[in-house]
Image (cartoon, rainbow, N blue to C red; front, side, top):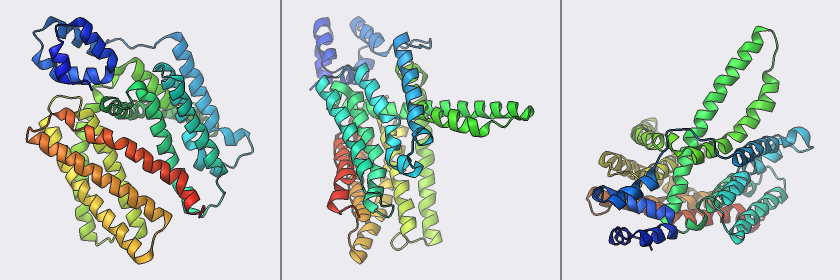
Length: 416
């Protein structure tokens, strides 16, 4: 495996450095950036720094072929999301089961082509997508089925992992590749939010202009512009990130650093409010569901924040905040987990309780490992790059559990 020592020992050997770079580009960049501050007097190191981290200030629109692909892909996403409008398909049936297929297959194709992944890996990705498509749509149409609801909820997450397989390409086994995928998701959230906010402003302006001449266009605009536009936003956002990484790679760490303290304060306030209000997650099912939803959101924020921290310099304040946030989240997880175990002991196993139990156990173990790395980093026993390793190592485990809940639960529990 590529290490910092490999780079340092070959820093005067351009040929060997090139070999190391081609061996694992993503990991090479991460490792090089972590040691570059100590190599700045070396001309070859300066060259590699410019090569790996050069950022053009110009906004790139890419090649005409790629731009055309993005335009066609955006139109395709808009058509897919409107299938119930022009085919005899029930809207509730379509959107609950197929919402993940609006964007994920298109992005999987995009990254498969951009990363030039092998035919075998491309086949695996699209076989997973096709199997998912047929499986979810062939499940019995029982609106009271817990396993159907679980499959519909977990299927987009399964497709998200398949997208990660295509995104990382040949680096899908490396920690750097997996963390790079998490950073891409953080950047995509930022740029997609900007695109959607811009779309909201344009929508308000358009509706206001047409209302001045007494023409009501909102219904038309909603069905043929807004909904397809929302479906296309992640595709356009991905293209912008790929062509102009300098637009967001400075913004995402700032947002992560701002949101982490705010989430910590919010979480502490919420826990205090729970105690004061006397809310009981052990007997209040709806409150327990909301409690677990909060846990998942906070865990996602921790994942993305750590992904950004692992590529940055040693930001001690940020690491302290993440350590405190992880510690508080462990407490939240412990409360949720104990409530689930209590409900199982009182009323037995159900598909929902088993799915939530498994998810909470995985999150708890992952949080404990991450918190340990954060603590060791604060004691200067680890480098910041080590923090992301428990996250990247746990992603395949999350993927396996999500696949089990999505595809095996309906069969094991006889579709009930």
